[in-house]
Length: 553
Image 1 (cartoon, rainbow, N blue to C red):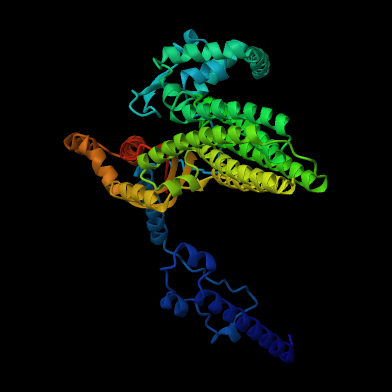
Image 2 (spheres, rainbow, N blue to C red):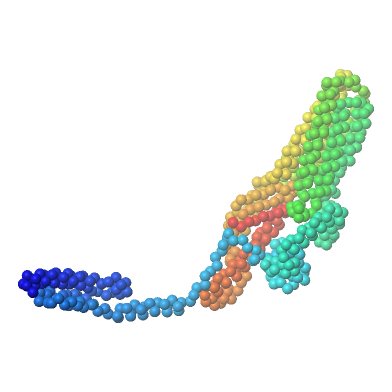
């Protein structure tokens, strides 16, 4: 080989060996990514750098043989330690007790599985017999009625399952319910049968008809109305004969007035009789408002019939005057009517005064608030009758003196105005009562003060006291209950040593949750009992409260 060729070959070999050496040094100095992840504590070995460097001094004398590059040697001890650490971590996690995942409350979920159902409802809604219920699990719950023992209830899911097992399917059960409902409605159409059932029901409960004797047609208001019916009916007949005899327009107006009073008081008597009817499923709050309904109809009747006909005859007398007859007998009839109407007015006024004294109200407020609407109507009607008799007699006297029918026609118009004013007042007061008005502010403050003094109540909100009529009140309030006092009252009825031992035996979260659920349910039941106690206290202090609705914030 020539000298020039040898020189070129040496330069080429020197260049290639130098390039490989640089690459090896670079690879040795930088640990691979795998080593960094598995054993980050491994540091580059400085001895390895110097040992594995390629000696380039003798490269000119080397042949074309391949140069072997030594590979770095990695220690296995860090990997073993990492493996042992991972194994220990897994063993520690396996040794820890597995925590049961708690079931959270889902307020948006709807379910009837945990609902209770009473035996009566199980038999009516699911058509089960008492013998069918004997095999079902049952429990005792606090009664929703005051001074009543705990009631027996069943789980709704058990009752539904029993009903499906008896009837086969929900469709069959629904068909049977519809069939029985139709039969029940047909049965209720017989009013005499319904009355007999109500009478038997009262006898079973040991209730007599003293309710009707106290507040019915034979009560204080009823007697006033019956007296007014007899007197006004008699006056109507006498005034009718006087009008037929004299032809006086004022006498005709008085006759119409007495007739309207008699009819209206018959309506009032029906309203009083109906108002004492016992509450039923269709009218759970009773029929006390029937007094106001009857009084409202009476006021409308006075306005339409009495005022309308009085104005008609008065205007007719002015437009078409007619010769008058002798008013001699008419004066006697008017005098007798004045005495009888005045007597009825006195009876009604005495009843109003006694009623106002019983509820600690003035007579004026008692009349304006229409506390006893039936007697109120009688009082106002008789007052209008007395004033009307005086006006009619005076106008008839002027007609006799002037020998003109114009004063008599004007008297008819004046009587119509009196009737219209009284009717308007009756309509206004009864409409206000039917719509629902608040009880007097001082009475409401007394009830609120009594409620706020209870130890279980922190504050009351959204208070409403509605006058239901017939001296009855419906009271509603939202209560901020004192949870600490409620819990303390619950603990007073428990053995604290037993509770402490029970708490010490709790070993895990599941047992603790069961412990809290048990006593939490008992505390909620106790809250219902406390609400019943507060309602009874309010009714005892304020007997006028018929319905007391207390809600928890």
